[in-house]
Length: 446
Image 1 (tube, rainbow, N blue to C red):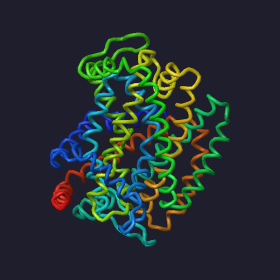
Image 2: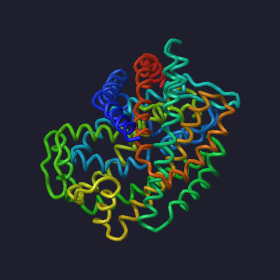
Image 3: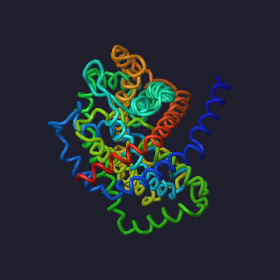
Image 4: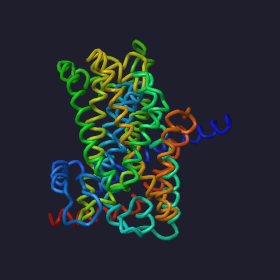
């Protein structure tokens, strides 16, 4: 087992190494330039499109564009926004937040392209439901000789989901509730399983309905709490921003419990944790957007890119600012513990509860969102009849994850999560002319 763990660690270091981070960044640069920067200039239009398509009436698809975004965000707004940002700052210094911003701006173009292709190449399955995502735009858009890339993506996505989108999330909730409130991990696992079953067994439409209500509520509540802390330290915001930018281009010396960080550490952990948080380029989000009620792929592309904007440029930024403004980044702590410390310093007795409960709700919605991704990957591989088996297995895995030691599973899932990106990025680059053509056509008529 130790040999297998060591081998997987080596593979993981390569999978999330410089080449992968560069590939993700360069794909974002290529798509941003090819789209002539529309993902940066059309943000107001994207919000208008999101509002106009909130009911989806009269358009082809299974769920509204708004609920498709909320479903994808239910999977992305999670531990990455609380623990991921903190880990990036703990290992890379305040400058890591700057590089998270950069990869998010590029990731908006990647997410836009993913959704455009997902809607353009989607299919209708045996149950009359819309299905799509990387496996379908690889199958329907690329030569048959490359169809194996779609199969590879589906295999990686199906297996990775049980780790990063299920057992790891259940374990995070169980750990938080056990350490902070004394709730047994078994009780947490069973409650999560029951709640998830009530939603997941109803399929994509029920998940989308729940996500459409729960995700905006939890995101706004967390944003409000973080804004309170930021405004309490308003006079320090200019110096905090200056520190973030300066640290992005200069090594940070050791101070307090912080061990110091190089420029490369800031770039590496900022980009890696940014991608982990918003999932741009990994190929997961377009699976949800393929189900959206829309009459043109670009409409959903505009809505999809808001997921990265809200996830990283708003929520992750606020978490990072709280950590920097309070000085907690110098404590030597990392992960959710660092975020909890930062909030508690600003709001004694309340701050830690905000992080604990926020983490629990975020993790639960991630379980719901990733169930959609895993289910569609399973359906692609084994057909519609496999869906009910997948849903049952998914629900049963939740209490197991809540009680288990998941170091190996986390490592495996994180590695497979990175491997998902490879076939997806290849497809995005090869199919980029389709994205550019559809976008030019749409905006010419608009």
